Amino acid sequence: MSQEKHIINAQDSFGGWFEDFKVGQLLKHWPGKTITEMDNHLFSLLTMNDNPLHTDENYMSDHKHGKILVNGLLIISLVVGMSVRQTSGKAIANLVYESITHDGPTFHGDTIYAESEVLDTIPSKTKDDQGLVYIESRAFNQKDDQILTLRRKFLVKRRPK
Image 1 (cartoon, one colour):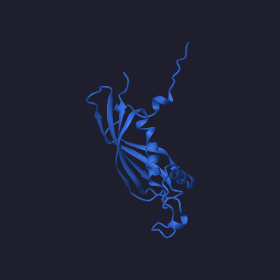
Image 2 (cartoon, helix red, strand yellow):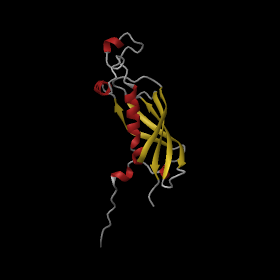
Image 3 (cartoon, one colour):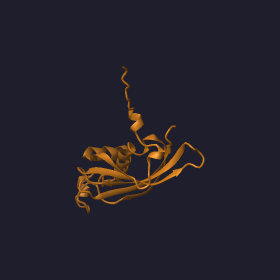
């Protein structure tokens, strides 16, 4: 008696096919990420953003927030990255990033969580095997304060037949 093996490739569960996305669908991304001082400083240095808002504790002591603000582009990158496994892991291309708002500040030690909502799915007019997925991703800190909202569109293949 032969035993049939069921093998699941990690690649198969990475991202979705066009048909997997439904308007109104809400995807909660996990795990979260706690932002360290090193994360913020390294990201700021790598991107050559030497604004003292992100790196100078003394300068920020007299600022409205009284402490260093995490680089907003780090939060954008983190939220997109957190969403890839459930959204654009099978994407052909990310086409548009739009309507990015920093809804609240982020500080060293904050833990970021994210979710994405499917806003629209648009079949390609020129390629039967592709479609456009439009999502809004939102980030929250450990206190459940919304800190970021962004929308993006990515092109993804249809499920193979």
